[in-house]
Every structure is written in C-alpha cells, then in structure tokens.
Image (tube, rainbow, N blue to C red; front, side, top):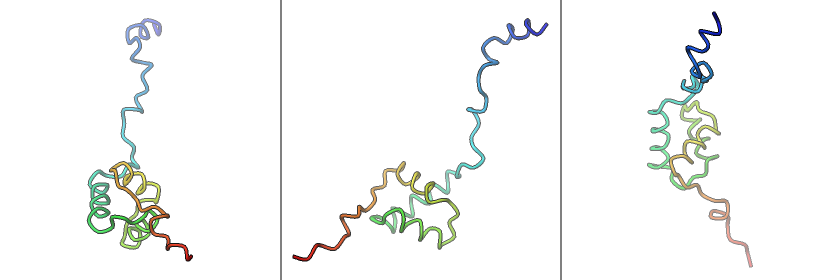
Length: 90
C-alpha cells in the first residue's frame, strides 16, 4: 500500500518545500528601500559603521550586517579608510 502511494507521487515527495517559503525574519521590502534611499539622499560617502550608528540612533532596528548587506546589494559605494585619512606630514 505504501509502495503504491510512493510510486504514485513519484519524485514530488523528494522536493524540499522549505526552500519555497520566505523567511519570517526577512526585512520587508519597503524598509530596505527606505534604508537605501536614506543613504543615497543624505549619507552618501559615509562608511557602513557610521551610517548604521546613525540609523540605530534614529530608531532603526536592523542589524549592522543586515544594513551592510542591503546597501551593498543596492550598489552603494562606501568611503574607504584611505580616502578620509589625513595626509601624512612631511
């Protein structure tokens, strides 16, 4: 009886249905868009550390890694340490 049921459903039983579901912890799209827009509007050139500190102080709840990931995914370019370091005295 079980063998007939298994043969009837075939390979569909082997598919992992968990991969089709979105995570409960995933940030809503509108929040990600707002973070990216805010960075591009007023904070372009800031590094992730400074932007996340500002974001957290103004009520943001996402983690540093999450903010960094979303900004990098959107193509934001961050200020490099070398670009803001004071020139060496001669």
